[in-house]
Length: 100
Image (cartoon, rainbow, N blue to C red):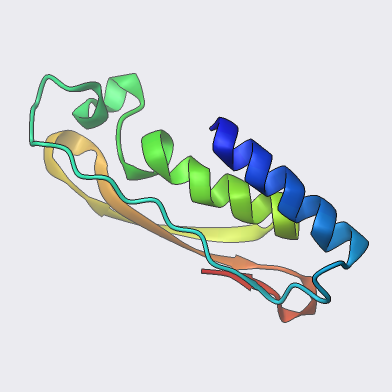
C-alpha cells in the first residue's frame, strides 16, 4: 500500500494543481496469481479474502486519490470457497471522468 500512497499522492497533487491538464481517465490494475489453497487467507471470506477486499483496494484507492470520491457499482464473479474471484466497478465522476 505504501507505493499506492506515494504514487497516488503525487498523482493527486498533480491533478489538483492541473499540472497534467484535465485528468479524464485513470487506468489502474492489480493482478496476482495464487495457487488454489483452501487454507490460504485469500480464499477465506471470514478473513476478508477475495479479489476486492484483499487486492482490489489498491487500484480503487489509486483512482480515488486522483479523481476523488466516486459513485460506484461493484460487480463480482463468485470464486471457490465463497470469495470473489474478480471484481469490476463502474465509477462515475463529475465532468465525464472515468477510471478503468
